[in-house]
Length: 121
Image (cartoon, rainbow, N blue to C red; front, top):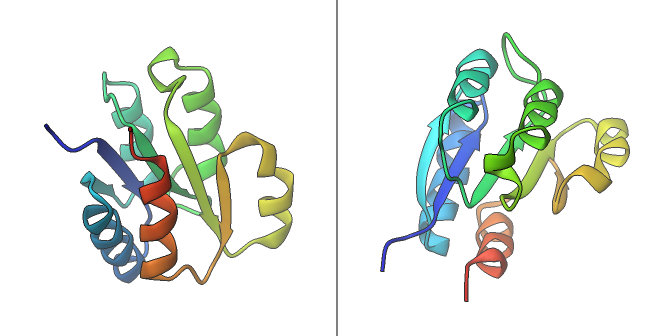
C-alpha cells in the first residue's frame, strides 16, 4: 500500500522541515513548497493530495489566495486541510474553511498526531 500524499506549503525552512518530518512519521509521503506562487501553480496540476498543511503568510501569493483556489478546484474536494498561522485573527476567520486551524507555534508531535487521525482507514 502506498502512503497518502501530503503537501506542506510553508515558507519558514525550519517549520517546513518539522512539518514534513511529522507527516512522514504519521505515514504520509510529502512535498514541501516554500513560495506562494509555486504553490498556486502546483495546485492547478492534478496533485491528488490527501492532506495539505497551509501557512497563510507566504511570499508572492498569500495562503488565503491558495485556499480560495483549492476550494474552487474539484481535485481538492476531498483533501483534508490544516491551516497553520501565527495570526490569531485570520485563524478565527478561516476556522470553517479547514479541517483544523493551528496557531503557531505548532509542535512536531502535535502535527504528527493530528495528521494520523486523517489517515484513510
